[in-house]
Length: 434
Ligand SMILES: [Zn+2]
Ligand SMILES: [Zn+2]
Image 1 (cartoon, rainbow, N blue to C red):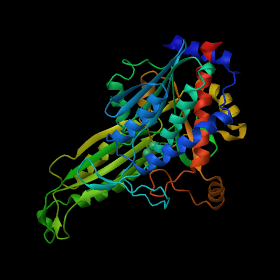
Image 2 (cartoon, rainbow, N blue to C red; image 1 turned 120 degrees about the vertical axis):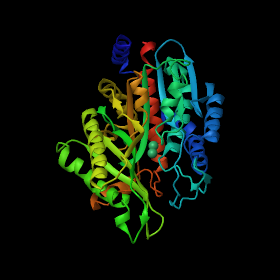
Image 3 (cartoon, rainbow, N blue to C red; image 1 turned 90 degrees about the vertical axis):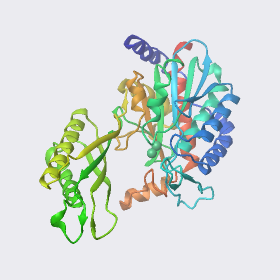
């Protein structure tokens, strides 16, 4: 594997000067269809693991472009392969899923979709993370690549991954034979749109790109009773309150200053009525970190504090701590990131390719990297450039992904997404042509 990778990077060095940028004629030819697809997907979002219509739209488009398409990989996942002679296999990935968020952007094409979630609750649905833009970009890129087969050689592997927002789709695709039933890629590419950069720009982060994420559920067991007779009960709400505050001392008192760690209690659930002391209380946590040792330190401290606070409160049953979702941080291969800077600059302009700091959200793309796929995960600017400049000046931050107001500046963002993907793929797939 290591030799193959060195060879790939070496052959990239040889071909580094090949013309890889998509011409404006190529982009203009695919853009109207990409924009239509974006608007259609934006109006028909589907929740994680339920992306059936989304997946079939993607599959139909890619099939019509001549890709060999397999559906139902790891649930609703899509794999599309285009073989074009000898050369490496390069994977480009998009996510398929949307979020239970009620859209408040006021856009003419805002989502009005409601559905039942897995627990049967009625929820609104919105592409509040921009995965619709990633899909539109991927399909347009697929179109350009299929119509310019003399510009590259090798195998292009496009994947539509379900359930990114629940950190489960990448693993399910791998478990369903993503890298055994299909060619194993030598390199993987992905991007994510966000308001942390103005539309038109692309960010590269060599090394650690984002955070390790751990989701924890903590159940504190008390003893229920009458609200007027606390002496007969053990109040799990008071234990929960003390636990929440004590957890905040992990980052401030235990982690070395300068190291990155986040402990957020996102919900607390307990009780039904003001004069009843409930039996139990539940806390939901998200924990983020960049480094493996800090991650372990924080998780160990959470366990210690949660259990000890229950003992201090007189709980007769040990606190239950469930670790129900986790992913490692995405690691960008530094040599690959540096190799791909030149073609990105050629496609977007030198001033539009920025080196960015690691970000705090997380991603299950890490599962692909852990399968031995050296990768570059890029940041795609999504903010209206004027609003971005104003927000820099005023200090008022723009709405982030997952907000009901999240609305990327589609025209420049989608254009740059397509240009960035084509430039990177042609560069990676040019080696064999030399
Ligand atoms: Zn998201
Ligand atoms: Zn996302």
